[in-house]
Amino acid sequence: WMQNFMDLIQEGNVGLVQETKKFDPYRGVKFSYYAAYWIRAYILKFIMDNWRLVKIGTTQAQRKLFFSLNKEKKLLEAQGFKADVKLLAERLKVKESEVIEMGQRMDNWDVSLEAPVRNDSEDEQKSFLPHDGPGIEDIVAGQEIRERLKDVLSSIDDKLNEKERVILTTRLLNDEPRTLQTIADQFGISRERVRQIEANLLKKLKKVFEKEMPDVQDFLSSERIVPATGSE
Image 1 (tube, rainbow, N blue to C red):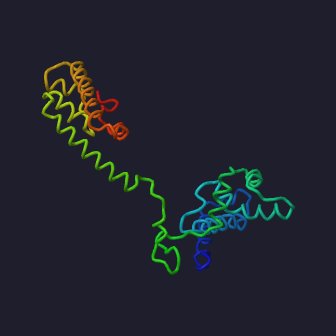
Image 2 (cartoon, rainbow, N blue to C red):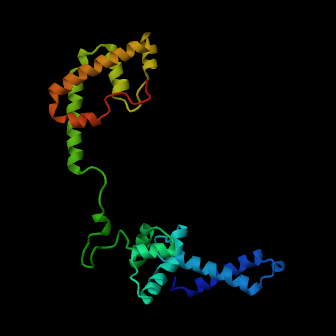
Image 3 (cartoon, helix red, strand yellow):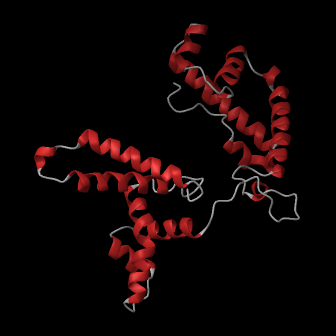
């Protein structure tokens, strides 16, 4: 904002226009005093909005700290006090975490994620951001296990009757499982009978997995091979 002083003046003019709309001459307040309040408010808001590329001062506490934190630090130090986080929070009536956050934001400049790590480096800042998702090894291992799971399920397909096959494909292994009632209506049986068939099928699957894939029980427990809550 310091690079374009005319923008700052223009914001003051906008504040003056706003003051003119709201000024009431019958309330006993001087026009110049009321105008100064609005002009100052718009200028300060412009400074705060353009202080960083990432907007600062989005809450009431942040706005208070933006204008008062450094002044309060200097005041405490001039009085012989150590301006620590706890004392600043008490004096400014904000949380300690808010003092820490605003101090960090004001003491450091924004850095573009596409900026190089060093002047002589081609690596960008974003290359070193932590990744919250699974690592490449976990992804590859998961794909291999899913292929094994697919093979195991294919091997038992001919051992299942029609009802079990429908329950397996449309309910147990489906992202949007069918309800017990819709399957019951399809075969003309009761909802409770479908539940019994499903329970027996799950027992069969458990035995097969324990025999064919004993080393991946943790993975299988995270895969949805049981009905989702509310899918009855």
